[in-house]
Length: 545
Image (tube, rainbow, N blue to C red):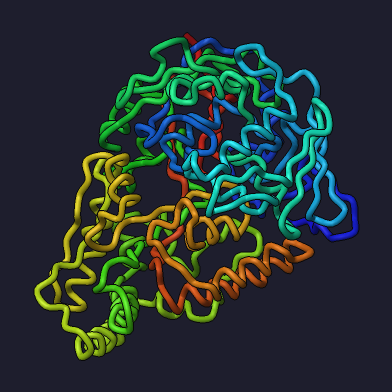
């Protein structure tokens, strides 16, 4: 994201032309093609990695959580891809050109096919995007298409800004100039779909046909709540050529169980070390681990539909809760320094990040100020005998930090505070999406593409698929719109920083900390690397039978 995309200048995405600030890696900072090519031959073992049961059918425009996302990135290839360091280069696209950051001409490489042998054409993208955008299809990622002419939140409407020129060329006209639009095109929502999808979308969601480096290993490859098995896709022609015999994503209810399997050699790669082993994993894995910054943050989301967090009293309480959390202590004691207290709503590995956003002093641990704010709220509307709660799923290792945060709030404000548990991530997500939360809830965000806007618009724009607090602010959205229409990424980021000032005033979410990727691998595999977004680059992992 370092380079400018100025209006009036033709711009084409070339390998590495849009680059995220380097975030470190466990290997060399080479591009994906070079990394894959560095491996001599192709191993034949099946690589196993931990995961969670996807919340929804595996459709590009409907998958917006990490359980499904880890699988989708193996099954599909987008117009561009993101390398380990966050740099962007073409994958299916031959070129993406614009003279004004509003109308883009996209040319595809010839010869791409889906795993069923059908060709990847311009219509594969245009038809997929139109399906994803259509109101009646109710796709979680539909808001990613609101920037394209013809999109509507009120009625079914074709994306009139899309036009197929020929089999390998299509054009995209946006509602307004968008400086970072090409950065987005590697995200799941923008993947293509084969013709077979439109014959039976429901069946396709259970057994998707993609154009990525892997494909489902026959019928029954997705054993719900257990695993997904994938094998190399012989039709794939991109730079992520599998260096193994396949990938199995194994679903775990507890991260401790996944880590135990890793230590015993029954799991090859783990993406997150459980808190119980955070002080010992680097010694236990003996050079087979990683602890590096990633584009992930953690917040407490505040449901706007709960009266106790609404109005003047609710706003005072939000501020009090934020001041009552000792982030320094939690990140050091619970996470052993693998988290960093938050200074904003985004991530420091994204270009344009700043730790000096006006209003972020509300993130400072200040017990006296917290008590003052709580007392002011009490004078307006008493809290009564309510219990403060943080909802989270228990199939991931969140209880230790939730308990620590609750203890900090309880000790500071003198109120009852406890965790509200959900057994499975998918169950937690369903309750969140259906406005069934009875208190604050955990909200983590993993970057979809390397842009500050990606940590803001999808979560805090009214109607956006990940706006789980159901927050609405005209001022915030106006600043985001001005940033999106800026002539360069640098200019856009200035507006995105101002938009965060609004968020610090309203606190629809309470930032907690930034997260490192703390992963590891067994001695059964080699060539393991984790990317800018914390995801392991599974295609390059090698494993002998």
